[in-house]
Length: 429
Image (cartoon, helix red, strand yellow):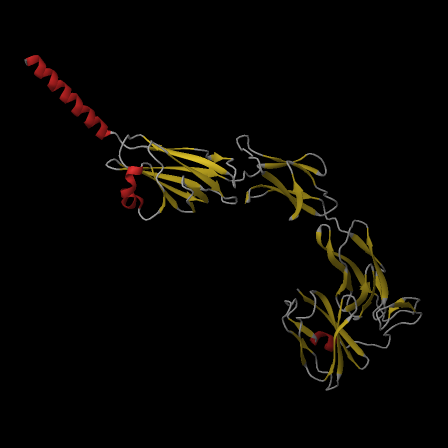
């Protein structure tokens, strides 16, 4: 009898011990599904949640950032939380467990709940969080992250004059769908691990490479290629000219292509021309030199080519057979000097001004005229092609020029007073 009593006592103790062991188990949640690098966006992926406690009402809260999660019943949530119940018997306890999130219908009995997730492209670090709640066992949370980063090239290797290769760190993984994009001076040059990029004769070329993985781009890695001081061409024309005499200058393009050409003079002078040929006149016989320039854009960006021209002393030269610009902008051969009767007043020249210069497109430009003893003067503004964009006859000292209809570029203000003429350049940008 005593032995039977002892056996019953031992069984009871064992049962109690098992219950205590079960109650002492700490809840642990887990997620099974793709994570980390190279998880394709815009594709359905299955994730299964589970935990280590048997029995009890179980609820799974799936929270997605950067995607859409769909539960077993077809209910889905975008960038939010979806609640899935493991057991039909827990239906009455969904409310208190799920904290006002979207509910999916019960998935039946069993230890596990699966959802499908579609990740969005262009999100750098989307994530899926699972919070498992078991009645009388507490809760536990697990999170998996998707790494959509685009590895940055560590260097660029120049394989030949015009062929470049992007190099990556050994542990960088380039996922399917990753593009290596190239630029040359900020302009797209195509994609690929190696790329042909025509360097040409530009003064400086910056070649850059960066990766693009489903809309997430890396910082660029760049290589600067100095090529001296190359320019698209040279200016040919007289090294010195007399004042108030037109002379012809040409722009010889030997390193093109050139997209635009604009002539101008740095100093007291005027230029009329289009394309590769222009006519230049210098006004002030008291200066030593001026610069005849041409500028614009070419394959390498912006350019400016200038030629220093010295003013011949002693006034005007003997008339030669030079071309001269006509009123209609054409150029015609003539054996007479143009404007040989014009003279300049040094005091007048110093007081003519244009403000501001450069001016911002749309900004009013103030033209300050000197005192011409109360005489009316003719005021013309021409662009670098010699086209008149503004003209006026006035005896006022100040004029306002509206620029909203004027293209960006260099302009020449010319004032005529009797036999006197003076000019001033200004820029609209």
